Image (cartoon, rainbow, N blue to C red):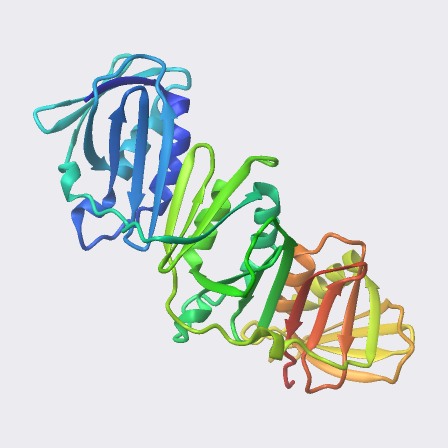
Length: 367
């Protein structure tokens, strides 16, 4: 194997592929990246057995074909440290990878390509295409609510639900829920649900960089695959049953509050400074036309904000984790948001004022 490549052309896919590779590995080959040269195309593959990412680069010069695996992070660090517009010459010599650029020369250890695990190709049951920016928006609006290391492993990921013409994403950690839907050209009569693990969702979002580019999605029995012009990303699915999110959506809330998103966000941020660092609780007192926000902590410190809102129902006092409210307001984009409440023990439904494609549920806190 022997090829030359511009530093920039190699660095971008290498950084993304190395992002999938875990630093601490049980199998040495898993901390490597697989390099394959065929014709005038170089492909780079990284995997942790859960997710796999393949990046493709067109080579300008004719190359000698071959395949080998090399330490991902070391190769990336070498590329990063080289000058910007340098041409890199890479060849395999006697089971070592020789990297030359300008007056620099590096010799890296390798492992055979045959040792490199590939994610099994399962039959794809459903294929559809989406605009990258739309899928990215769907993920950004919901991914913050995924659980991180919950024993209910099916919560450490995101539900993707496909039905005729609609793709919906739902994430919850048991205390809050985020849901967003988009119209899509999908021919699927009955509802089809898959759970994509947290790492898979976050890695996939990193690939969606072309605003109007198309991403092709294949949902198989055990895998999801996303293909863009330069990358093919595959992730195992989580085997489990996601909670019935429709039962979680609060019904029949009779208290409708309309407020300015930015003003609420700033008031919550200021109040949060003096909330209890562990529980992050704040108290909302709702009265006609105004919302009072209060926080205090074990050091007997207090914060209070008053903000004008569009509300003319009965007064209500309710507690929330302020971080959850700030997360929701942080992903919204409209000027006005609406809050639907029923009583101090029921979850709140938060939505953009003129837009029903996203819904957020936040459970109350006893203070």
